[in-house]
Image 1 (cartoon, helix red, strand yellow):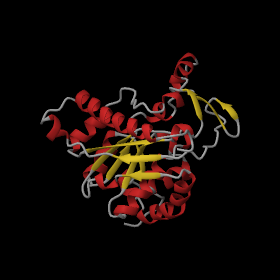
Image 2 (tube, one colour):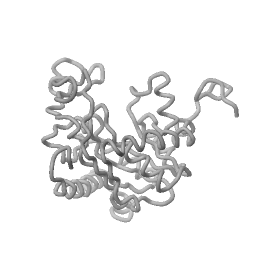
Image 3 (cartoon, rainbow, N blue to C red):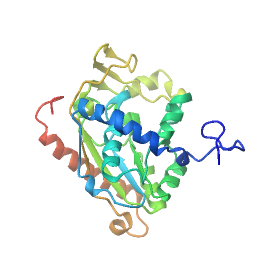
Amino acid sequence: MKQGRRGMSRNGVDKPEVAKWDPGFTRQIKNLVGPIIKRYFRAEVRDLDAMPAVGGALVVSNHSGGMFTPDVLIFAPAFYEKFGFDRPVYTLAHYGVFIANVGDWLRRAGVIEASRENAAKALRSGAVVLVFPGGDYDSYRPTFKENVIDFAGRTGYVRTAIETGVPIVPMVSIGGQETQLFLARGDSIARRLGLKRARVEILPISIGFPFGLSAMLPPNLPLPAKIVTRVLEPIDIVAEFGEDPDVDDVDRHVRAVMQAALDELARERRFPVLG
């Protein structure tokens, strides 16, 4: 069916989020932006062979680098390079990033609004869904605690995997918190200023280039820290936890597996930024 306005059918009804992915547009981004990001961060994506070759999979990762997090632009190009464009990678994101034309471009590249419904539709379609349970809370963690897996108690990703019957594929990355010096999340400051009423839970404080000290704004540019991402073995929830799994038990296991892998990457790392 031909489209009128972008993302709308001729009868004016919104297309589902997952139907807005444009493989041709995604390929252009992969070919244009992917090599720049890979070179700038000297990025490595290890053990992509661990990814299930077919079917839906929920990739669960720590989130790094603050406002200019490069996580998706490191993982997605590597995934498409290996597996092609027959199966999309959808990334769950906060609704606030979908602004005007930027929102349209993001949806065409596979970024969808974070909701259990959208995630379930994507997973049941056989796609890979990338989720960062810790969100901004994780991406602004202090640099001195950069190698700690902390999802802020969020376990919705486990429920989504259980309900859709897909494996959880843990993934960890290191180096993103060295793109600037993250000092504090500023969650207590945000509470005192009453920013939660505007759904702002943190007011992160960092030091970077070119503005020096920043309380989220103005945003500093990321330093070219070396970033290494590692894909871990899929977790079959039913096989490991039975037909009626406890969500908290699964979450603890996922975080423990990720923490062990992140500790290994940390032991390999010789110098901050340089890697």
